[in-house]
Image (cartoon, rainbow, N blue to C red; front, side, top):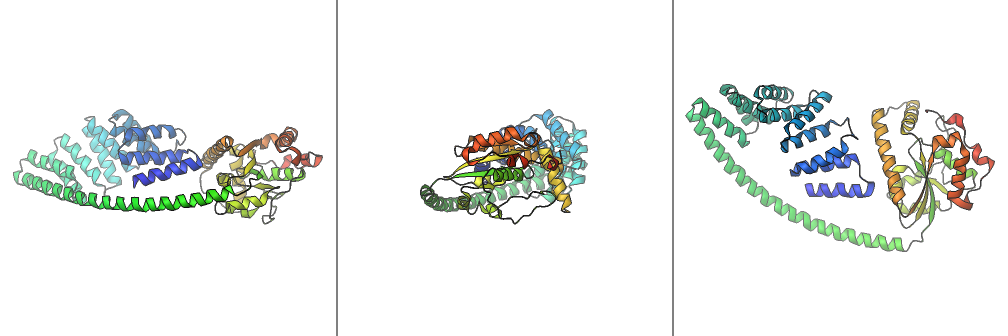
Length: 420
């Protein structure tokens, strides 16, 4: 269902912005379609941003082979094996390349390595047979190709090479039997393919009819929602956001001290990680299911995690104060919090840093381009070092709603700036 997959990932990219993982999925779809040049173009974009992703190098190696760029394919397969010495697919790619480069002895070694790691993959046996045939080792090639045929009885290239081996061995009976089997199998495959093609055409027609019906339903729902939105009076809503542990709670305290009431429920109480409290409203997590609940925050300030910012509904306008803190510090603080709670992170530290840095960067780029958002980015380290300039920024950004007083600056407690 490549068309559906392509459409789905495009919708995701339209909503959340272009990401490295989205490009990787697009590249995978292009490979399945046989568009290796397009796949390679996408992979080139993401390889430096996801340097530890072995799958990218393996995809690139496959693309290089399909495009007959042998040397580059060999280098890519080498990078995979350096990171993952037991990667059978990389050995298979290397075998193909060595065969095309007439390095049959090397190809035999690579094929044997692939078979040792993944015996049940018929491709390893096929490539071993092809390599041995190139070396005129016909008996050995017969055994390898017979193994391939046993594992994949309908794989015609193996039967073709097996027939050639019997011809070289002068075994006319087995040559004839294999050729007859190849012809019979080919006919069966063609007949099966025609039936499958007919079945797929019926399925495609049914999917299209269903999709058209769904599209009509979606359009009706869109029209209903648009009409509902048109009837809503636009509000201006103040939001504080940022990555977890980036200073959002401190900003909420400062806004409170400046005369702006916070939208909080007090469910999450102060602790060692946030001695001054979290200033959260639990219900805001339901935004994706119930966007209109944001209207209850009118006239107040509300914390919204950065991942939920794309769900802020129209037609309202938003003043968003986005707290920015070096991602390494953010992750260090998150890890300390997890450790204090007796929990462990689900990913390695460097991976957490890269993922959160990319997410924060993309979210801010989307917000900066939105015609419904006024964005103020506040550096948490700068705020702690010298609150004065940030307080002036807040005054300019919020106008008369924000009253500057000594109590605003008192909220900033440098001793709580830990994990630097």
